[in-house]
Length: 396
Image (cartoon, rainbow, N blue to C red; front, side):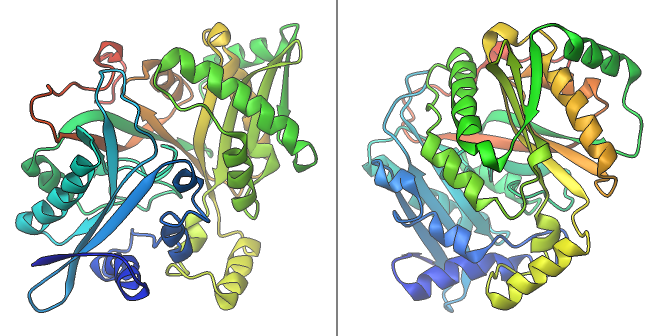
C-alpha cells in the first residue's frame, strides 16, 4: 500500500469518491456535498486558509492501485491550548477495516503536523467550527443530521489501536416533538418569560446584521469565560455561514434572549437538510437543485438539529435557556411536520447543558469521541477539562 498526496483534479476526485464506494451498502450514510468537501481545501472558499492556516490531504492505494483510504490534516492557528500543548487536527478519515492501512494514514497526517511543529493531533475533527463534522461516531449508528459525522463501527478500534486517547465525549439527544414535554420545565420557562426586563426575538433576514453582532457578543462572552484558549467569533464567518445555509434556514428556529435590550443568549436550530441530501449523492448540479426544491416542497424535512447555543456568564443560571425553549415550543406547534429535534452535540465537560437536555425530555441517542494522539511522547496526555466531568448527569 502507498500513500499519495492529493494535488490535482484526479486525486481530488478519488478523495471525494472513496466514501461513496465504502458506504454504498449502508442505508444510514448520507453523502456530503462534493463542493463543500472540496471547498475546505481552497483559500478562496475557506477563510481559515487566508488567515495563516494550512491543510493537506492524502489517499491510500493498494498494490493494485485501488483507493482503500483517505485522510486530511490541518491547523488554523499556532497557539497552545490550556494545557500548554500545540495541537492541530486530522479529519476526513475513511478506511477499509485494516489496521495497517489505518496506521499508514494516521502516521502520514502526524508526520506532516510534526514537521509543522505540532505536539498533538486531535481527530476526527473539522477544519473549522466544532458544530459540524466533529468526533468519531461510536454509539447510535442511525441516519445522521446535517453536520454530524457518521462512521464505520470498526473505526473506534483503528483509532485506539494506533494510540489515540479519548479527549472528550460528545452526546446527542433526541426530542420527540409528538410527546408532551415535562410540565415542571414549562412552568419554569413560562415564569422566566414573564419576568420584567426579559425579551425574546427570533432571527429575521431584514435585521440580520444586528443579529450577527449580537451573536458575536454573546459567543465571545460565553466562551471566554468557559474556555480561555477559545477563538473569538468572526462576524464575517457568521455572515458567510448564514448565507450558505439561507435555502434551509427557518427564521423562527434561531432565537435570541435579551435583558433590558442587551443580548444575553442565543439558540440556533436548522431544519435537517440531510433528509434531502440523501437523495443527491453529493451533487448540486441543475438537476440536483430541481430535486432539492421538489423534496423541500414535498415536506421531506421532518427533523431539525439544534447546533449552537450561548449564554453569557451572568445569566447562565437564570433559566433563560428554558425561556428560549418556550419560544421554540410555540414554533414547533405551528409546524407539526417537524416530528423530532436532535440536540447535538454537548460535551461531557458541559454538565449544565446535559442536565438541560434531560430536563426537556431529551433521549440520549448518539455518542461521538474526540480523540487526541500525542505526537510528542514526552508530553503527558490529559483529558479535556476533566475537572468539569460530572458522572451523575452522564448518559448511562
